[in-house]
Amino acid sequence: MAVQKDIPFCPLLSAGTDMDKVCMQDSCAWYLRKFKICSVYMMAHEAAMNVQAKQAKKQ
Image 1 (cartoon, helix red, strand yellow):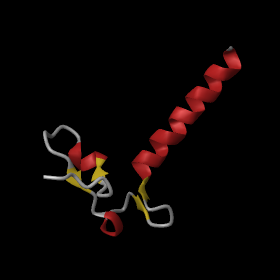
Image 2 (image 1 turned 135 degrees about the vertical axis):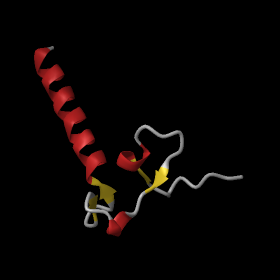
Image 3 (image 1 turned 90 degrees about the vertical axis):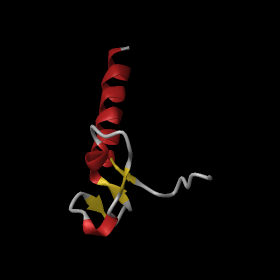
Image 4 (image 1 turned 180 degrees about the horizontal axis):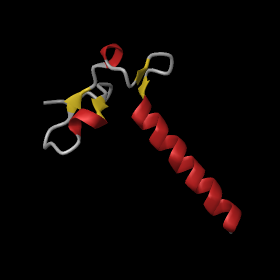
C-alpha cells in the first residue's frame, strides 16, 4: 500500500497516540488557510530558526 505524502497530519490530535490523525484543515482553529499549514508547525519552525540564529551569533 502506497503512502500519500501530501496528506497532512495533526500534531495535536496525534500526540500521545500510536497512529497519526489526519489534519482537519479548514475545520481546525489552528490551521492557517493562507499558508496551507498548521500553526503548530509554523511556530515550531520559527522557534527552530530563532535557536539557529542565536547559536550562530555565539560562534
